[in-house]
Image (cartoon, rainbow, N blue to C red):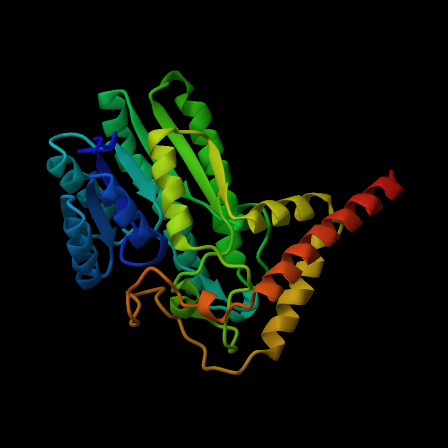
Length: 324
């Protein structure tokens, strides 16, 4: 059995208690990396650590709140001590969301999304880079989203964070041009089947369900391992991410169309009580990798959606040509 090239490498994973982060922890553990697990839910982190140890990897649990600079600094210090002075890979992955009309969503909810999804990533990079520069190498992986390219109506703070995060990665990459051993890598998944839709803030007063087709979180985790082994600027996961990005680029009025469709979908959904979800405290539901949405997903709906996206792109391209 060949030895993994990530054997003994120190990997910090934020948002490791569920979803993509939990899948990433297991994926790196299979490569015999030494994983540092960060999230707010300490009990869930210990579960993940035991899963990683069962795969033969060393694991360290560091309860962390990415909205607090002191907490992120303590994470970096603990990781460096665990790594005997090294941090080889830092994965910015922790994220929250709030769905609802912009003016009907409390301002503190918007601020919490930006603090976690954008400024939390800046905090992670800010504490990791000194170690990368000291050792003349390191890989920073940022979990982006199709929402980094395509606006998400009724999730305005999330869109603002992801658009800002794309600019952050580009700017930081340019600044680090003189450090060829340091890599800033972005992974762009399409809609992923995680507990995020169940756990996030819901100020729409309607039940939420992610639109198909949904991506397996393990696919995103595998993409992260690939980036760690072969760093590159960007990688997409799921055909829908590429199709949506293309459709948005060439279709006039895509943002308005997206808003109308999202609003109509919310209007048809069952009424539920508004909730701040996991914005200000760890989620109360079961911590796991999968959200369970794919079990209800009908293959024909996924094909119809992909076909619709492609058709919208073609119509947009024809309209653009006609205008020219």
